[in-house]
Image (cartoon, rainbow, N blue to C red; front, side, top):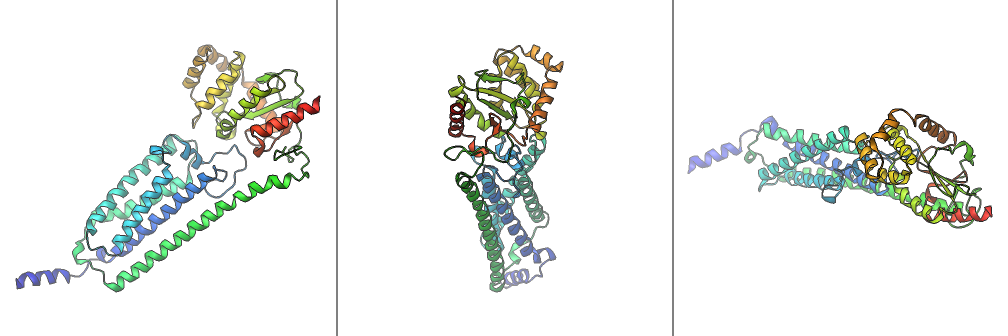
Length: 421
């Protein structure tokens, strides 16, 4: 018995290896990186809560046509596993890892090794999924999500630090933590967690501050000082844009519906791959259904710089218009809208679905029948002062983005029709 006690004492008094002495530092690194990753996912969720009116890194978009990489990632086919956003899954992942790090780092004496194994398995699974999402971004999505890449970097660091445990096994029975050391570690973990909570609070306050100007602006303009304001309500024409001579904007070959000789003309400028245009589409369809006997509605598809692949889809829209199928084709293109645009095979399938000879349509497009129309349409839009899509003009006057609602457009059209009588 005496020999066994002596052996145990020798084991506990054995000097720690250099690696064992640095275990607390590596535990701190894991904890810090996990909380920074959690902060990143919180910022992702806050960005999404604004409907991406701000991009991932606090910069305001120059126009509504811009789509951030974060928005592309959130709206992608893999953006919501099991109906839950990847940002939420990421937040739960980082919170769990941080909790495990806290328990282990503060010297868990019971089940410590099993906790480390569980953490290693969790980090390994998180890294594989993060790797998949990163590859998906670069292969499938048209833009990168900076916050997603930052999160991927955090997971990679966690994996790298955790991997050291696999290659540098330590006999944890000789690693002990006295009361003084445990208190010091507790202060560190508590202080850093408090710092992250403070940063999250500041982030939330920042995003909440973005709401007030958007609500207050219409009230200020509604006082009657806006030179192009509507007669009533919170609906406004854009005072910063000049009234456009429609003869310089509307081409005789532009698709249109409604009354050909109407005194009121509505022009909708859009890109078939713009998500905001897709959102506006049901509103425009409802307005057209109400006023097609009184108003002329002109569709003007253009190609945005970030959606160069829209040129083919716009050519298909013009080809469908020749067949009297423009609206059916536009409905399907918005319904099938995907990152990177629709492929030629998909567009031929849509044509077949609405009764168009897909091969004949392809032949006309290949011959370049619509090239001049596409180029001229883009130039006309730019010359008219269009800086982003969707853009809606009523008798040459741009309406503000907040006024692109069914209620506002109904109000504008009623006023325009009454004025023209």
